[in-house]
Length: 275
Image 1 (cartoon, rainbow, N blue to C red):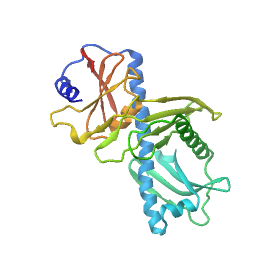
Image 2: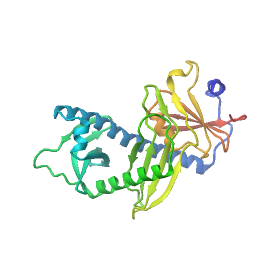
Image 3: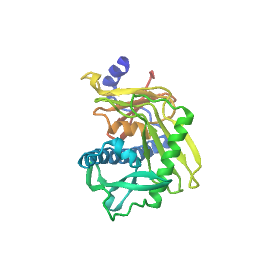
Image 4: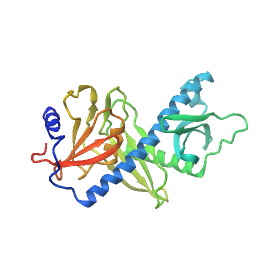
């Protein structure tokens, strides 16, 4: 890692002397879009959870009390006016119902709270499908005995249906330490319109945690190597939104050096001596 950081510091101003293929560039652009979407849905879950926990205290409920009342999880779905709706749902007697709803824009919870008497606790058909998909993704991850790269619980981000009706669900290692974010231990499960698992993949073969606290001041950023794709993935983009430094990715199959900074993927150059 020390050698990579030193090398990156020297290469940051170097011009590119070869270009990746058009499919690789197209995949990088798709990664930008998908990574930004994952981040947006994850932010909605994060900030609504903070508000929900504050509302629990106002009700003089503990999380254990909420779970005794049936609380089983959350799901995020698109709402009107560009907002995301985070619903905290419960399950009782086999029925799923809303317990709290929060409308989020970016990192701000604009409105919402626990349901009051007279509020409709029914979940939308989309929300019910997302809840079902979330459960299937977690079950698949458990069955595959996926590895985590932090001590925290696995995080889930379920995105709304794509044009073909499929739903991508991400099961990811969670950040638990300030200044450190996992770049490994992340997985994608895609379910068809019929609810059946279409595909699954891991994004790494081992754990790499981006520790921004220990990056030398003169270093251009934090470098990682990537074995499974010829360009950065949506996970690299997602990670870049969660760290205060530039991420550099060397794709081993072609020796390309890429910069990923706050969601933007930029090809830098072909490495003469890939790490």
